[in-house]
Image 1 (cartoon, one colour):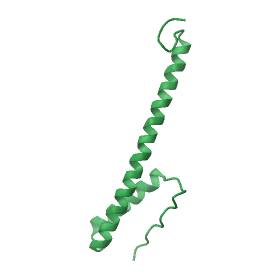
Image 2 (spheres, one colour; image 1 turned 90 degrees about the horizontal axis):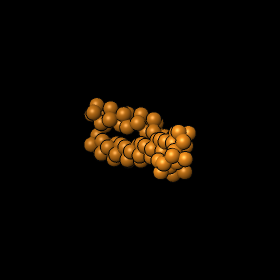
Image 3 (spheres, helix red, strand yellow; image 1 turned 180 degrees about the horizontal axis):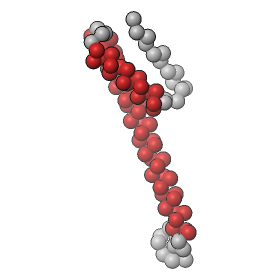
Image 4 (cartoon, helix red, strand yellow; image 1 turned 180 degrees about the vertical axis):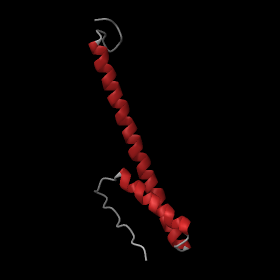
Amino acid sequence: MSKKPSPKKASEKPDFDASMAEIEALIEQIESGSIGLEEQLAAYERGAGLLKGCRSLLDAAERRVEEIDMDLNRVEEMGSGTDVEGTAS
């Protein structure tokens, strides 16, 4: 019998890489046909929840990158002698 991963506590921060690894393991279980229908449905549901969490993490990472880019652009504009509106100082 395969080990089921222990559910994470709500206070634990989700980990993208661990979630992706678990999703891959769930896909292998489902595709192998080694588990029954009810277990397949439970695995699918768990995978869908993990995928939703991964998407949230990716969205947050994208927002961080955009913020960093905006900050970098502001610094570059200040260094080039123009203010934020693009006029010469």
